[in-house]
Image (cartoon, rainbow, N blue to C red; front, side):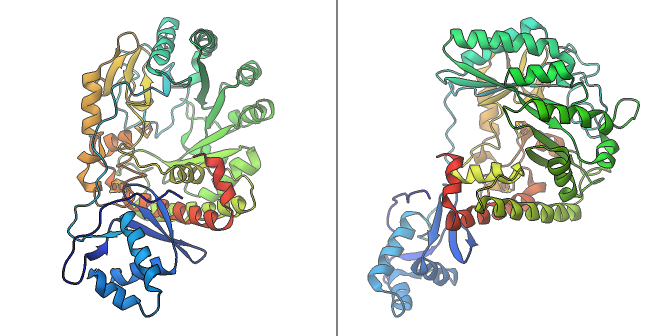
Length: 490
Ligand code: SF4
Ligand code: SF4
């Protein structure tokens, strides 16, 4: 649990300082009451006295003396005063006229290190998935007839590695992830780039780690061997059992991909044992049996972990998830989350990464000023070497912030950081989930509102429900198996 932060005392009146509830989100686990503080993201467990003070103030503000008189007959007065002081210090209660605690609106320093670079080694794909953000209905870059080359050159890849080494500053480790189009269409470049990056990182006294995302259709024994030998993290884009996968993830001639990818994935899972292989599922209105998809991918195919995300698309598309279906989807997420907790209470792994990722953020006390690290600690590189906010914007002139040869255009980056800061998202200022969400994905916002700086207000109910569920899981672990939380670091 995070320690309390000292703050000033409330203003005095005739009945003592007036106190009211401030900005927090309450949740419970095994009968214990917790507060999730906004915007600090600290979590505090309430004892009986704390609960009584909060319950009393939930009826409305009152002076300190009145509050003590009201509760003093059932609680020790010294303990009560101590509790009021503690709750004031953590800003759970305070002066009703005091301004809300806003997230600080200062910008990150200009030399903020680049941690992850996503290299779009090709914008060509051998599949024609209906919902694809790159080729489908909602594309923002013309990857088919646009100005970018279909494949990244060796020279651009090497310049990209130099860019990553430079921009990662004093950090001893940086991460390079390969992306597409279909990444493995440019396999020769992957081999050369990993060899080059390893050599150059060693010369600079650094380390670069690698990963890639692939649709698995082009996996073959020598590629799998190379992935294993080079310790490359692999994420497979796959949507589930055969009818689901073949519904939308198809070759250009319309043929489904399930029968092609299944044996290749099984071979990959059997051979590449040094790093957990994950599946990344796109959920659409067409197939929303989340439990069936999860079980198929973990129990029948053998994935170690599975992350599921609703498709990014405009609401009128026939595969866009309707509001009613979002509730159905959430209930299934909650069922899997419950299962995740049962495993965690027994110190066992459960592969539903949507919970793992959120619990990690909660545990680390993450309070975001930005929806994600795009344009700051994470950048995407298009096939021609232009640097964009992230891989999904690679090639979009509007979202380009430099190039690997000439570096980051600090003016453009600063404009982006100002425009996308939580301080600008006034709709989010009263939301308790903002430390975790901070307005959400810029690409989703661009598709929904035509503006990457817009808050993703169409997802608020979902985000708040999901964050609440994960807070309850966090509380349950804090109560019954706090040691499990240590694996999420400081
Ligand atoms: S987008 Fe919605 S859920 Fe997210 S911080 Fe803003 S108001 Fe809250
Ligand atoms: S903008 Fe969206 S897609 Fe891009 S890195 Fe952020 S969360 Fe991911």
